[in-house]
Length: 387
Image 1 (cartoon, rainbow, N blue to C red):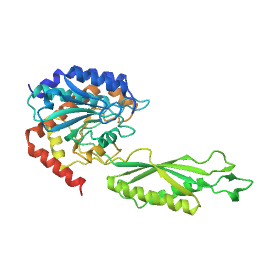
Image 2 (cartoon, rainbow, N blue to C red):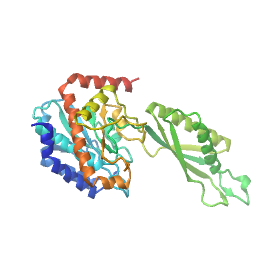
Image 3 (cartoon, rainbow, N blue to C red):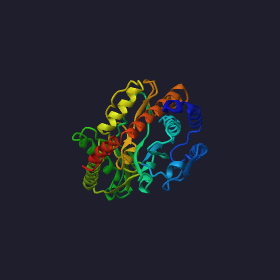
Image 4 (cartoon, rainbow, N blue to C red):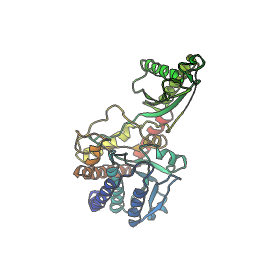
């Protein structure tokens, strides 16, 4: 049975998943019902479920029981399913998750002797805390040759480009005193924060393309007539690569250190979220996805400058990741908006799901048909990550 014929068989199931997720969005770290819903469907289709997977709450892996004993190379189809607060699936996870599941089922149906074991891996908490990173730390992806996940957006693109990112919560410490009675006895912590933001402004003049530092003052004191003993800045940092990101963090730390010293403050810093790495796209990966899109008669364009960050970049540090971007057909409605979440509830969401499943199916079968392609992909990936 051809893949697209098999896929058509599962279109209604995909629509059921898409509709349910759109009507029941759960934010990062709270995907209990979604996880249970998806597991229930996969069990009905003969998958062996491990949940939680790698100690990550509301995660799972689903394996075809008949494939487990064949000792085949393993491929992971990634399902993301967290939604955005007060918006819903403005990230398109409802369509991408449904696409991944019906793609796996269609391959299983169309190719009983397929040379890969294709697992479906549910990865919660992508939007906030980087759930894939926690799963990686406990070996959730050690056994896979490569992974694939689609991203819904306003254009078809062969890959989703992201920046490496991090955050810094920087506290400045002084000494409290009354601003009128004995100000000379105080040391103003807010002075350190203010000077720090001036230093960041000067630092930006010498940053490399792709570098970005943005911040806010979280705490500058409680009342004007008391010199604050503590003030806090919170900054986001982004760079083209994880190595450059670490350099940038050192520069920002030096800014904080110098500013604290200048106004007789002390300082410390911590992170709220983990470091995110960039996604690497090798030439062979790129060619395969472009070929797949051409064969499906999709109009596509290369990705613009990298924007945003995702824990998929961290997963990419250990194995090749395919991240094709699938157009909703509406360039006027942008990702991460309530309008995009509404789009997922209509025919555009269905189109994205079906098209995404087709693209993933094409990519996976192309690699399965030629073992040298996978060797080349892994070689390019290793060369980039080990340089």
